[in-house]
Length: 317
Image (cartoon, rainbow, N blue to C red; front, top):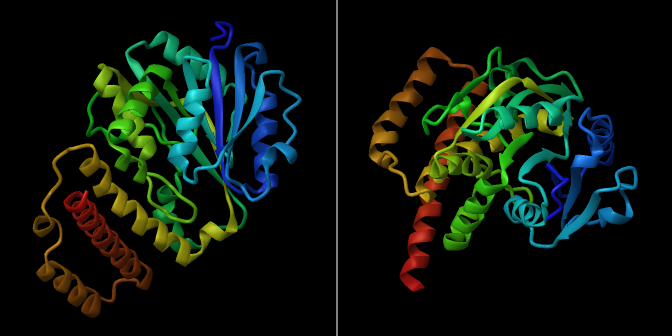
């Protein structure tokens, strides 16, 4: 490993929008941290067009194109981890624009706070179109995170302090432990996007791995990202599918980590579902709120189906 490389930037991408990816790369060109001490890995996850022939990285002497043929965000992240030279990794989505001081500030935080293993920042949207009013209460589902103070913790249940995948800064030794855990239990690779599937949680799984090394995690207001939100993600259909997938993930993550989750009867009884239906009927809750609740219930049902399939596969293994 080259000791001069302190940070590895890993961009995982599958069939990216070229205008968005170009803006992501343009922002990286103007980082205040010297290019001499960070590398750039563009990991192309089986894109229809091979990105190495489409995207010019010659502006950075320590940039590499990497092609990962196994479809899915998790295998793409794992490939980036294996290829990275530095002890500090930064995961940047193909629609994330980092503020100019992001890398320098992230490195400073980890160097000054050795008890933290993973950090992130605030994520502010730039919408391609003005979002409909009904969407704004659900904006955080689009990985939008507005914060007014920095928080850090080593408490698994302190969700405000757990960094998200967009701009995730994480120590290489945490990623190594995470990678080994997936070798032992490959089912944990289910916790991320694969093609058009909207299951997620791999980023949280990585962040929670800090606890296994007696490290904490945090979110810092001095770290800023602009998240480019395309118009296709502002539709009712997409948002409902996203909410459904996120709710499935909220149960699947602790289940695959071997943690205790509430029994189905305690989470949602048929009687409770019927009571909610009557509530909507008589009190005329907004149509979108009813659809969101239906998506949440469907997400929970999806989780139950996944568990049934996993248990069935155990029987026949």
